[in-house]
Image (tube, rainbow, N blue to C red):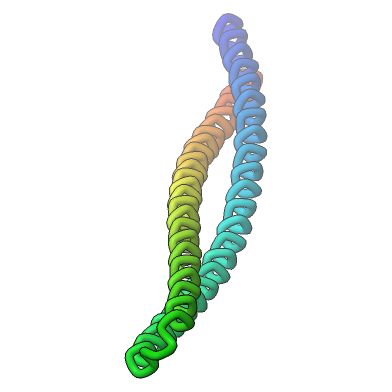
Length: 172
């Protein structure tokens, strides 16, 4: 009986030690979850900022496209004028060169805007992938936490049973 009592007490001590270890693990998990939530919030803020930047770049791109269309219309008008004003060929050639330079510059700006938009798109994809990975990590940690909590409850139940057994043994 004393051996069983000693064995039960030893198991009680082991259960307490295990419970303390689980509590420490739970605290660590909670801290990790908090850190991950902060990281997710930071990524969401970065995503919102990136989305704003993308919209600004899209507006600039739209403006540049409109400018390009306007320049093309202007070029067309000037070409018609060139046909009607053949007497002033030298002046019109200079004007045409200027317009071609503007079109080239506008095309260069358009290309730069497209490259910027592509880079932003890649960055957004990376941010979304990072967010997804973090969400999966948070879900995994939540599942682990649930498992740990279940294990803790089971240990608590076991401890209560051991205490009851211990009390019953003392009465006998």
